[in-house]
Image 1 (cartoon, rainbow, N blue to C red):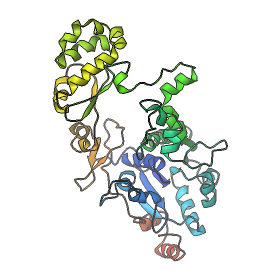
Image 2 (cartoon, one colour; image 1 turned 180 degrees about the vertical axis):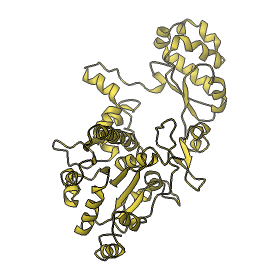
Image 3 (spheres, rainbow, N blue to C red; image 1 turned 120 degrees about the horizontal axis):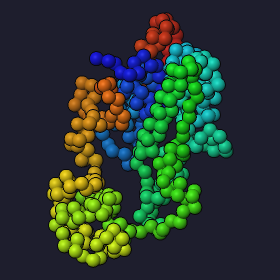
Image 4 (cartoon, rainbow, N blue to C red; image 1 turned 90 degrees about the vertical axis):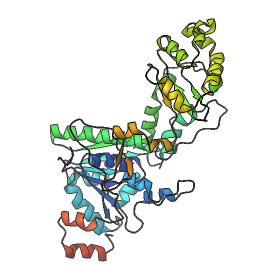
Length: 401
């Protein structure tokens, strides 16, 4: 059995919170050897995320096991010259270096592109920031909640009306899509290296990804489009592209974009074939003009049955709809299991979330446990040519944990 498409690819993850390390995780899923650099002692501050107020309480560090599976932890105190020299030796033999440290921190720790690239002409240096690397905000720190979600307009756009309180994002909601962008940049640079033999500096940032995510409406604004006032769900302009509550309190959302063809099937599934003879709803234009009345009818109909019953009725009739899942649904989602969206950790029945790409004919690595702080320090250092005496000296100097 193969060890992955990226078997032999050496990656240094010198990053934290969340997008940049998650890009390294995707590389590891396909077989890359990823070394996680973190400070001795408490380690990467991201380990502490579940301890913040309001986060779910668990005996497992769920944030860490998701982002750091398959990786090897090397605990380095990069404020010490001996640790910087260790990192430089690793970079000489690495394929990819990933960081999202703010530019001033990179300079202080000696991990800028200008310092590392001359050590290895084949190195792919992947840089991730909050707001890009030019302009007055280039050194500004940011999380996805502000640089991706709020800055892009998404936080405002998902509000039901202009008077509704802006919606908060959930942990990592922007970071994980951003991770795929950075992964794509890295893979693009690897392809370039295959053709030219030369490494590259690749970049991405939260702000750019957020605007890309809100791109349809953002482009409309850039084109000078006239926006209509936002309407509450009950007065939406399209009843068949709306969400409805079932008898058991659960919700589903309709997305019928081929309305002329799909509305008759929907009416019959809802047991309301009489709507097909109602002049208010005879055509798509009529239904849009009378959307408030139709939404009221649908509200009454969907409230008569539980979600499970509506799923049975709607499935298999060419109707596009989706269940508004709650997290409890995911545990038993057989479709996710069948498609390896949910996969077990190696040697465990605990499930985790696979990266969202597959290559036919190649198996992704079964997720291995996330490392403790410095768990693999000796292994990594020996692999880099350090003797036991060297390792002991590094520990004595406080450079290695």
